[in-house]
Amino acid sequence: GREGGLPRVWVLSLNDEDDGDTTAVQSFDRLSFAEEAYDVGLGRHYEFDTTKLVVGYDSMVTPAQSLEIDMTDVTQRKVLK
Image 1 (tube, one colour):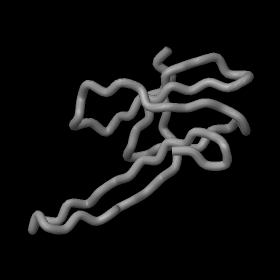
Image 2 (tube, rainbow, N blue to C red):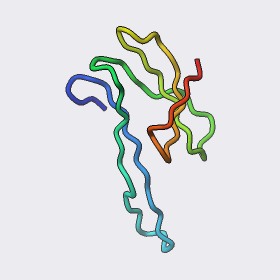
Image 3 (cartoon, one colour):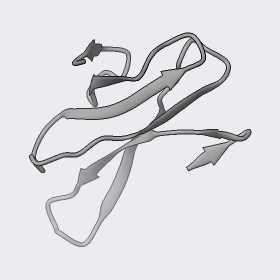
Image 4 (cartoon, rainbow, N blue to C red):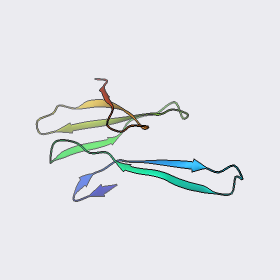
């Protein structure tokens, strides 16, 4: 989605209840970045059952890179390329 003219990525964590009829939102985190103006978007994901998310990121001062983000702690990031 977009907010304030910038692309944004949110990580939504669901808590499945045992009865199968109820799904509750456990957490809803927006990824944040240090630069004020940037471009970010989801990368390709071939593994559905994972806690890792890959996003493409670049800004006027940061060259294009792929970031692996741990969805259990969105502050944990690893530059892949």
